[in-house]
Amino acid sequence: MDKIVIKGGVPLNGEVQVSGAKNSALPLLFATLLAEGQSEICNIPDLRDINTAVKLLCELGADAGRVQDCVRVDACKIASIEAPYDLVKTMRASVLVLGPLLARFGHARVSLPGGCAIGARPIDQHLKGFEALGAEITLDHGYVEAKAEKLVGAKINFDMPTVGGTENLLMAAALAEGETVLENAAREPEIVQLADALNSMGAKIEGAGTAVIRIQGVEKLQPLECSVIPDRIEAGTFMIAAAITGGNVLIKGAVREHQEALIGKMVEAGVRIEEEADGLRVVGPGKIRSVDIRTSVFPGFPTDMQAQFMALMTRAEGSSRISETVFENRFMHVGELQRMGADILIDGNSAIIRGVEQMTGAPVMATDLRASASLILAGLASENTTEVSRIYHLDRGYEKIEKKLAALGANVWREKE
Ligand SMILES: CC(=O)N[C@H]1[C@@H](OP(=O)(O)OP(=O)(O)OC[C@H]2O[C@@H](n3ccc(=O)[nH]c3=O)[C@H](O)[C@@H]2O)O[C@H](CO)[C@@H](O)[C@@H]1O
Ligand SMILES: C=C(OP(=O)(O)O)C(=O)O
Image (cartoon, rainbow, N blue to C red):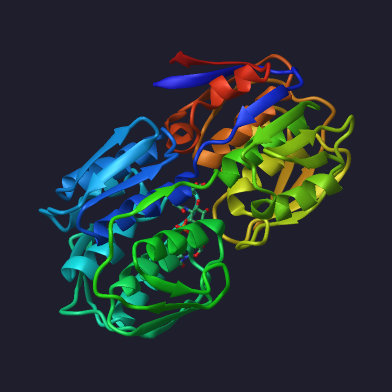
C-alpha cells in the first residue's frame, strides 16, 4: 500500500489545472447504458472510482475502455443486469446503474451499498422514486431488484434533496412514458451536467439546477458525446492548499458559480480570491481568521469540502464552529488532526476548532476520501514530516494530487509503506 509523505512549511506558488469531476463523470458513464451505440465522454479523470465504473460497465456486457482522457462505451449488447457486491462495496455510486438498466431493460439487480465511513447513506429515496414510476422493488440476499413492464411518469417528492437519487430518477424517467416531476430535487452542478447530457441524447428535461425538474419521457435515446465539467471539490481543495500555506496559486478551470459558498467563507477568513480568464487566483493571508460553517446541499457549503475547511480553521486566529448537517458521521479526520496538534472539540454534529500557532507533522491515517485531503492540507502547513497512510481512499477522487502539489513547490511525494 502507498502513503503520502509531506514536509510542510512551503508556501505554494504557480498554476494548477483542475481535472474533470469524479461526481459528474460517474453518472455520465452510467447514462451511456440508456442508448444503443457508442458513447464517448472526455475530460475523464484518471481515478480509482472511474476504473471501477468502467469495470462495472464491462461486467454488464458493455464494451468500455479508456482512450487518453476519454472513455468510450458501446452499450449495444448488455449481457447482465446485475451490479455485484464486489464492485458496489468499493464504490457506492454503482447504484446509479439501477435507473438506466430499469429504464432500458425493465430489470436491474444491484447489491445494496450498505453504510460507509461517513454515514449510513440509505437509498430509500431512489427506491421510492422507482416505485412511483411503477417498478416492483424486492430486497433479497443483500441485493435490491427492480422490475417493471414499463415505467410510467409520476410526481416524486424527495424527503431530502439527494444527489444520487435525483440522478437515478432523471435517467429512469428519461425513457418512461409521459411526464415525471421531481420535487425537492438536488441542484448541484453535476445534476445540471447530467440533465444537459441526457438532453443532448434526445431526452426532454427542464428545470435542472432548480428544486423542480420536469421530464417528458421519450422512446429512445442516442449515444452520448460530452466533456466532463471541472471538479469543484478538487478545485476547492487546491484553493485551501494555497490559503493554508500563505501561497499564491491560479487554479485553472475553477468555476466561480460552482464555488460561491466556499469563496464567501474563504474571503471572510481573510483569503484573497480573484477571478481570472482561466480560473481563480487564491492568495493566502498572513493570518487566517476564524469563521463558522454549516454544510448544506448546493448552493450551500458542500459537505465534501468540510474536512478540508476544518484543516484551514486549525490554523486560524480564534475559534470556529463547523456543523455537518448532510452526513451523520463525517468527523473521522478530527482524531487524526488532533494527533498533529489541532485543538478540536466535538459537540454533537458540530466541531469547535480553536486555531493553534503551529501544528507538528505526525503519522496519520486516511479514513475516507476528503478526510485524506484534509490531512494532506494540514501536513502542508505543519512543521516536520507528515505521513498519510491508507491513501487508497485518496486515489478514489484525486488525480495525481502529490504531483500537482509538488509542481506548486510543495515537498510531497508517494512512497510504498
Ligand atoms: C458520487 C457522488 O456524487 N457522491 C456525492 C453525492 O453522494 P450521494 O448521492 O450518495 O448523496 P445524497 O445527496 O444522496 O445524500 C444526502 C443525504 O441524504 C441521505 N439520503 C440519500 C438518499 C436516500 O435515498 N436516502 C437518504 O436518506 C444521505 O444519507 C445523506 O444524508 O452527494 C453527496 C452530498 O453532496 C456528496 O457528499 C457525495 O460526494
Ligand atoms: C463522499 C464522496 O464520494 P462518494 O459518494 O462516492 O462516497 C466524495 O466524493 O467526497
